[in-house]
Image 1 (tube, rainbow, N blue to C red):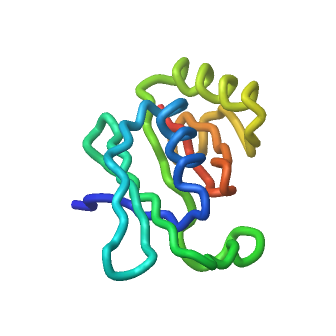
Image 2 (cartoon, rainbow, N blue to C red):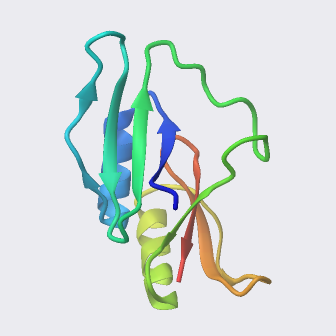
Length: 126
């Protein structure tokens, strides 16, 4: 079982606010290493899954447009097609990019695809 997914970011607070506002994530206490300049913060999602947001000084930006080798997306289930529709519109209204949907995909999901403030791809699924 996967315990969590970790994302590097230069803006822990901005991403924590995005996932808390739109996905109901509960941010844990910030962590700062005593031995190196590393910070992180876990965000708990309702299902028990967690995201870890991590920061180091001088972190390089993402390497080019997707697709690329590595993490493709994070999928978060919100329970129903109506919830996907509502959340997608709330994210769009807040000025974040909606890449596609809401729509029924060929593999049977009802989803939309949005970008978080760092450009990470998030699938919102029913």
